[in-house]
Amino acid sequence: MGIQTASSIPVMEAFYTLQGEGFHQGRAAYFIRLGGCDVGCFWCDVKDSWDASIHPQLTIDEIVNGAIAHPSRLAVITGGEPLLHDLNALTNLLKQKGFETNIETSGSSPLTGTWDWICLSPKKFKAPLPEIISKANELKVVIYNKHDFEWAEQYAALVNDQCLLYLQPEWDKAAEITPSIIEYIQLNPQWRMSTQVHKYLNIP
Image 1: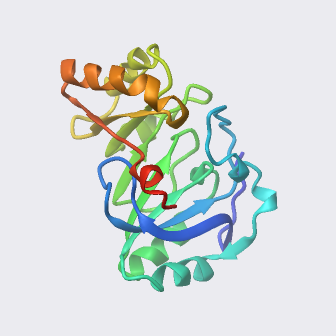
Image 2: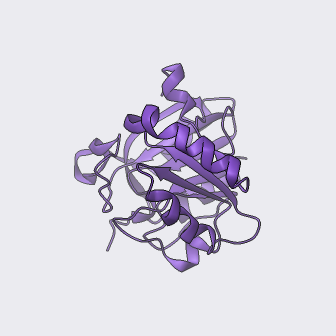
């Protein structure tokens, strides 16, 4: 079971930046990175997010007030694994304040919240739930080695027909694996490339 509260959520960090990955790449966005993860990818670049207990509990009002302070009305909820928490109250208030709500999730915990965009990034360490696979707007598969292409296709066969398909090189292996991703997409043009542009730009 995840850690759930209706009035407060552990927040590792919240910041205003540009979305660096996937379909919404390049858009100004307010990121809300929640604490807590039970997936545990060995290549995770935010392992400090895993332990929810070390991050401050912020009220829903505090979180949304932070978002309101910036001009963009795109809020991206990420983690950790954000669906360890009940996100109904947070997304309801964000929507009331005029925000578009996006989530980045492994899909391994039950879906809560009201979402304009669901980015599903499945992980081998804990499989996504069927209910989230079917609702995903974007499937973003991190490619660590060449075996991951076959694994990506397994999920591409499960998502809905409107779901956009992205392959993203694991950052530390990007120099090695990116040429293989380019070749794969050229042969399988239903896929698109997702690069972590924010890391190249040295922004959050």
